[in-house]
Image (cartoon, rainbow, N blue to C red):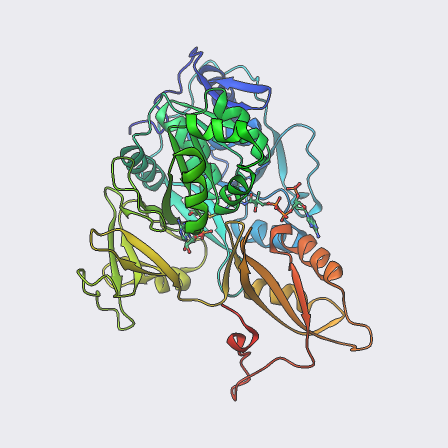
Length: 482
Ligand code: MCA
Ligand code: AMP
């Protein structure tokens, strides 16, 4: 089996990872990952306390080396979310940075501290695992119920990263700047494993700031990855931060993804810097499926063309492909290829429901195809999925959490447009006691501590009753839901 990371070699002093002042060469990463991999052999699944640190990168590379599926955890996850993930994926170990305090939900697991300076064992750990072995399990929200674990194979990871290298002319000379969290596909697979597969360098900012982006792009960064909220904040800062304009001008490639980047932000960045932002489209389950190519026409507001190896079709409500030459014909995007996930962990029915006949994965995203094949995403099939700050958030999950709050009698959650976040979460609540309704802060803290801070409602609207149809179903559209 060919190695996932060919540049990972004993003794190499090429820089692989930089997190602020802390860095690891390919040789250092090899040593640390081999040492940890030797301790992981036969471990079953492991969860990784995925802080934005070198330790997370070492932990994931070591698990990949050992052939042990890694489950990245959001270190800001609340008790309900963590409890669900741990009982669902039944890990044998938790990998964390020395000194990190872990919450009680992980208390029953054996802990291994990730040592970035570890010496390698004498013997290299076993052979490279087979391509169809699970590499990562990434939890992703659905319309109802708790998040599902998408099982991603080594083949899927390699296929998506190689197809992106082709579309973006991504090489070992690139220095990627990013500030994304490391528990999702965007930040971890594209942002960390991507540069490592190419043999290039990644510089992680720890947290997103426009000053950090400016500094790293003027100090040799060549590529920037971000979600639209980050590019929106960049667009807002261009007038007052000349070094940001300078940094962006020097970059070879600016890529946005995880949600739609408004054309206005494309235009503001283009006007101030002369550079275009390239959009690519994907999903946890499918990894990345389309992109504007660096050697293609710009296409702001579109997500470009299918990547090499990806088959893509648009289908109507009856499941029939829509006319390919009709730029007005809206259809659901369905994809097929080596990039697809294997299954939802422990959820055979949900897995089966995710595919149409012929192994086509139903993305639930609606799009049109422009005259030259560029895809333009026009919406989503499910009204109960919200994209806020690039995070996918299921309305049902938040409703369930709100209903656990003593002051809440009924609850419905919708998304509404937000210039910064794309969409913001709105909680529509019927209070248990109308004379003592809950406050937004109460409910935000409640949701943040159970689920995750990014799932907290940003707006609270109190009602006497929820609008329901004859079947008793809440009519979200009459609440102004998307
Ligand atoms: C605020 N905070 C709270 C509360 N209120 N904490 C607990 N309880 C509360 N009530 C904290 C937050 O945790 C955060 O902490 C800080 O206050 C600010 O929160 P917030 O306003 O929510 O965040 P932000 O700083 O404005 O973040 C914007 C962001 C972020 C940086 C753009 O949304 C982000 O990183 N998004 C990336 C999403 C992503 O990677 N998606 C990929 C999945 P602190 O400041 O300490 O953090 S999609 C995917 O993978 C597919 C394949 C794809 O296509 O890419
Ligand atoms: P997730 O399940 O968190 O991986 O999010 C995947 C979803 O993000 C997709 O189904 C799309 O709705 C959305 N998405 C990702 N990239 C883009 C993009 N460039 N433009 C519009 N939506 C996007």
